[in-house]
Length: 212
Image 1 (cartoon, rainbow, N blue to C red):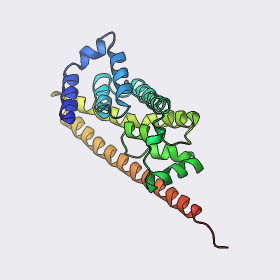
Image 2 (image 1 turned 135 degrees about the horizontal axis):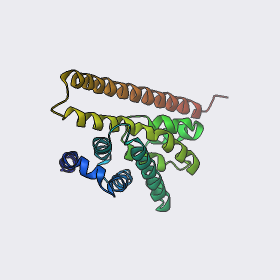
Image 3 (image 1 turned 90 degrees about the vertical axis):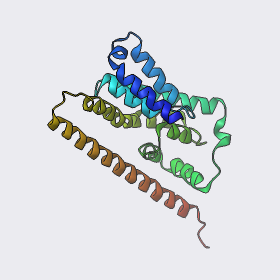
Image 4 (image 1 turned 180 degrees about the horizontal axis):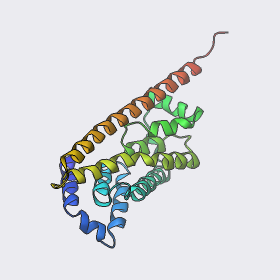
């Protein structure tokens, strides 16, 4: 039901793209939606980024999308720490290993950010790591906010594909770029997950006491 609602909103935004772009408070509305949907369990972040691509294009909507993603990540961190939600962190061995990997190698925070895990879920998981400092979290959120540019570009491409006057050659090229872009994202996600898995294995091996 929520998915259908998000799709309906995306279609409606596509029809009113010009009105939103020319509106005095259009950018502020999109920014607020990005911040709000960056905090779980509120749905619709990806749809909102795609809609921003439809409305403002690529790279025109990049500053807005990246700013919204970053501020949303910071809002999630503030909420988790203010309400002391870290006590609800998963107690599974895998999550504990991820915590140890992040504690020993801060760069793993950025690697985890680059995985295909949705942005809001990433915000929550990383915010709930007990040893995650504000400075480390802020740096990883700022650097990885570029991740939303892919979804922004896809949104802008979807708008151009809906143009009936678009030449077939340009349409085919856009479709090819979208396919290759999706494959690149999957490859990057696979590499990030593999790096996280290797780090997790090293952490587990390091925690095994050596025989005397």
